[in-house]
Length: 282
Image (cartoon, rainbow, N blue to C red; front, side, top):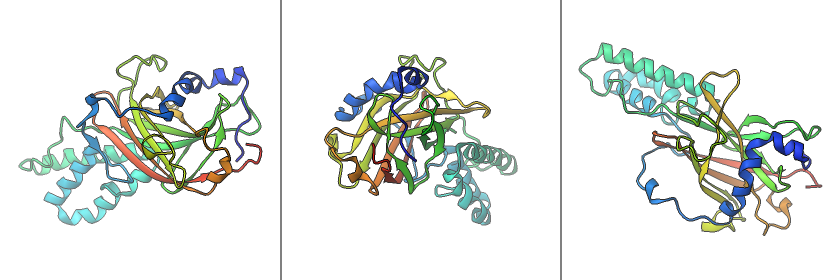
């Protein structure tokens, strides 16, 4: 896929999130201080390359305690390395609901087990990483969300500010978002810490290709998908020091991204990607 042509002001207006946030990105990616002390020691839900929910972790522990034979079915689906967490966000939400229902039933069947007691304080928040696909033939069209699987391809495009970038999107569920997505001072707006590495080109601050901290994410409800939120893309800007972007084509990249929902434990996801630079006019 070729990158989108440089949009006109009208196109930039349609890409509201980029228009609002892109001026913040360059200084953030050029060099950022570490996260504030308020974030130190914050609890994080992570399983390395994939993410499971705290509820499902409790459910798997419950199954292991009261019905060990059931782990053969439950763990490959709902466990830390389960297939649930490589699915789209809607499927992940269904998996979390399954864990919640399973815990409730197990608690009725085994009331003496504290492990199977449905917790009041464990988060069921979840998120997935995606990418934005632009329409080569319509510079006014909004980009389209697409999932970004571990080992998938991430293409360089030219963004609304004329900058070369990698558009990394997010979808999530089961956490609070700001009532007004344009109110970046709202403390309920989720934030992201993120870094991206590309083999041979980690020339930025702290030895990364690019990184950002405390980046507000103006999620919006996804139309036609109750309870699911979407942010089309974070613009990961290609550093000016890279004079020939084609040198990045085919390189292996790694994305580390931590979501901080309001009032919830942080969620961490890491994926490997293959960098794609196709258009000779880029």
